Image 1 (cartoon, helix red, strand yellow):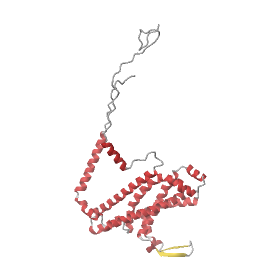
Image 2 (cartoon, one colour):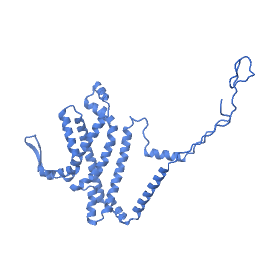
Image 3 (spheres, one colour):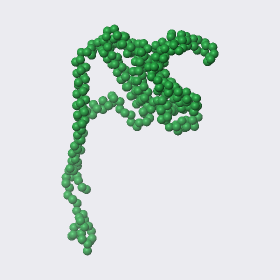
Length: 336
């Protein structure tokens, strides 16, 4: 005779067993989640707010900023003309740099050692010398070549012109900025092309596509996801680098305000005016870069990141929505 197991009654007959069920305890005990405290975050937030308040107070109370002068010249025709030249320099120089960068990147990846070597030397030279030096060389090109001619190499020329009349300060700035940018864009495009799997090119060539068609229709569209972010950064950098053209007397934004404060001696207010315009245009370029990156990320991300407008709308809708009621456990819940 064996002893009865736990949960069995000793009065059972016929060898049958019956388990006793524990009585129900009612509602399950609620778990109270205590959020983790981050005192360091609050201290950092207070420090940031104090510094920001000090900065705003200084900007508002320091009369030497002369905000009335800033407002007076902010929409001045001379300042707006300089802004137009800055934007024009940026657009044209970046266009030259992008086209030249694609050509140099393809040459660098070529199997021909002469093309690859020529591209490497170009990139080495223009990345190794300061852009300001290049601007000054182009501006003084007439010292080396008083006449610029077009014709048969080592043969007769068909047309020639005076270098001083041909290479204007604006053209010298375009050449200096554009050719320098081409060296940086070549490395950006090359990195983008190398990011595409080589099997894509092999599959396209197996379908009968030429190397040019493969590059144009298969490789570059996929490489744009890698090319766009640094290209946007280069465009913003070009906008600010165009201020170096003031050294060769191109009347862009910085040189325009320099001409004004050289007469009225309002140096700081006019520099603030130029800085505000730079910030405005840079912000617009940043917004454009964001949406272009989002467009080319469609094939690589399952879900596109929310735009700033969508984030604000989601935050407002979440803020005004009624929080869901807490779940009530069923009556008599517990063990089965």
